[in-house]
Each structure stands twice: as structure tokens, then as C-alpha cells.
Image 1 (tube, rainbow, N blue to C red):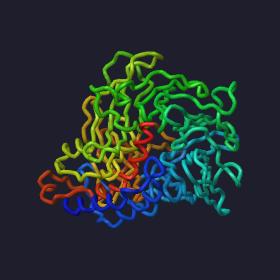
Image 2: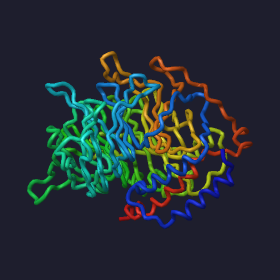
Image 3: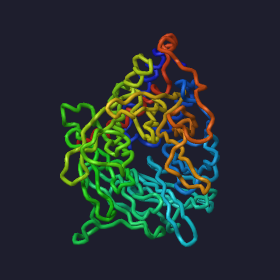
Image 4: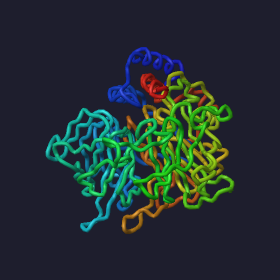
Length: 510
């Protein structure tokens, strides 16, 4: 590992070099990601794990951004800068690549899966949102090149060894009137409708009943052209639950919609002034953007009960913020109480939040982090029982205990010397027929822009499956860390991400 002075010097150099870069979108441009990867690959591979986490396998060669699991087959699909990759996850500790679609997409930040039961069997596909450009090549060569923003692509992965673009070969992209930074199905096992991330106050709905001819739904046929749908917190991600509700996270916080009628979403409640960053009593709960969310045990919701992840009244939220250059404060993981699901009912209320600095303090890493590091909270996944796996970019893969939503605690961590973790997901438990059971294993897939795919096992309450016991990683004390003056190298190389702040701040203030 490198010492703090060396890390700080590297951060300064990177900031000087890239300070004039104008980013193209929310996470910098494609060139920024490539430069980041080059820088991090030059770092030493120095693992740093808590004693309850063990590395099971590493799969380099795939520049990872996000992933999703299929519901009716043990398949895992990942997106990256160069390719969409389908993995066989039958052995969760040793996933194997089964198919690759060369795919340069800016920026398919959230890989989303969908399925449809047909007369010929289950049809499986992935949804890709195109922000600026796309060039996809299948077995027949280049199938689509586009320089236009805001399009939806569907990739058929029914044959996992041969993923293919759906739609007309000459132009399979489906245009959208709003942003397609992310696109998500309401019901993954019966994906008939999908919602886009949208803009600050709007979003689009796609009708996918005919997968070969998707179309955007017009919210107001009485007006000329296709009219989008409105949302008070648009801009980044939709997350849907089993109770028929969707949460739209974005620039002004989080909104909850009743989506039981998917063509007629109905606003229920929002995160209010706290979610807009306007409540002085809830400082720091949205300094930039609410990124994504999840409501555990959604069908158990009843009004008036104490907040609990087992009662459906807690919303888990990532607040992304790399405009903040202090890594101790740059983007938090949060819990919010869902007080009402009646239109006009009480707003969501914040419960607790943790930044990387909070986690480091709890983990005994009481060291000064360099200014300009790239370490915001990002994509996360919840495991029934109350443990969250989350990527913190250069801050590695973190595990959080949310069993008491009023007091989020560190549960464990895994850092690699040259690393940038965008996503972390618990592997589902599949039954003998290859269907998800609703339970999660103790295996986590960490999706890394640099390393590709890392597989960890974690000692968690109520561990499920036959995975190897973890706990083989060394437990580092505060004294050990202080003596080594050690920090994960990825934190500093993340200074490249600062260039992205310029345009994102402008969008926020627009």
C-alpha cells in the first residue's frame, strides 16, 4: 500500500491534469472511466478485509458498472464500458462467462433484467438505456451505431451463450422523450411496462407487451407529440416492490407512486423538504441526488408502527454526492421512515445516514482521507435479515447493518488496492427448477470498474446455502492501520471523478 503523502500527491496531480475536463454526463465521460481504470490498474493489489469477509474468486477482463440476476434461471447479466456479459451463476462462488455482446454504451449505469412467459417458454432480456452513444456488435457484426441520446435497447439473453439485440437490425433503438440513464421493469418476471429515469420533473413509460416493437406511452393524447409523465423527484432510478409501489429517486429526493395501474402511476408521497435539501433539521440528506432505493418487506406495511425493515415502513436510499470533495462526507447511505401510503398522507421522514468517514471511524480507520477522492455511496442490495451490500467507488465494498434503521452500523468491508466498486449484489437462492426463492445466499458479487467481478462470502445472520464459510480475511486493528498509514489506493485515483462535478452541479441548479 501507499502512504498518505504519496496518495495526496497523486490526488493533486490528477486534479491538475483533469481540472479543465468538461464531462459529458452524470459520472464523467467514457474517457474519464478509461483513464480511471488505467490509473487504478497501476496500483498494487492490496486486499483489506474485515474478519467476517473472504474473497472467493476474482474475474478480471470485464470492466464492470452494474448487474442484475434473472428470476427464473441462475443467470447474472453485467454491463460495462465494452460489453454486456451473461454469467452462469449455478456455482455462485465461481460464476462463468457464457455469452458476450460487444457493447459500448454511454452510459448503461444500471443493468436491469426482464422476463416474459410465452407459448415457446420464458423469454429473458436486459434493458439498456442509451444516454449519448451506442455501438453494439452481435455474431453478425456491427448491428447498431447511434450518436443520439435517450434511447432504449432490449437485448435477448434467452440463449445465454448468444445475447442478441431485439428490434430492426438497422436501428433497434427506441427513442424516448426523457432521459434513459436507467430503465427498469415494474415486474421483472412479467415485464410489460418499463419506466425511465427521466429528467428532473418528468419520466417516460415504455409499453413492452410486444418486445419486438416497444413504444413510448403518451400521457396526454390530446396534445401534439408524445407527452411524458410528471414526477417531483425525477432524474435517476425507479425501484419497484412487491406491494405495487415504485420509488422514483432523483434531484429533489424520493417520490413514492402507486403503480398498480402501470399506465396510470399515482403519486402517493415524497421525501419533502428534507429530500430537497431544504430542511435545516435534516442537513446532508440530499446534497446532490437521491440515487436509488429499496423498501424491504413492502407487503407488511401498516401505518403507525415503529420503523423496522421487517414491517415495510423503512425506505433504504443512496444519496450520491461527489460534488463534495471531502471523502468523509461524499455521499451517504440512508434510512427513511415511510409514514403513509395514502395520497396526501404524511411525508417520508429521515432516520439515519452514514458516509464513508463514519464507517471508517467505526472500523478503526481514523485516518485523514485525501481531498478530491472519489468515494460516494452508490448501488446497493439488501439481504433479508438486515444486511446491505453497497459499493462506495474507491471506498470499496461495504456491508451495513440496518436491523435498527435509526442506527446504521458497519457490518464489514472489503477494499482492494486498485479498485472502483460501482455495485454490490447478494446472490439469490435458486431452487431445483432454477427459480429464485426470495432468499439470498451469503455470497456477494462486487462489480468493479477496474477489477471486473469479485466474489466474496460473508458471515451473516441466518446464512443460506452451501457456500464456504467466510472469515478467512485478517481483522485489522486501528493500531495496525495507523502504523501502516494505509488507505485503499482507489480512493485517491478517484480524484478523476471531480471533473464530473462541474456539469452535474449546473444540472442541479437548473
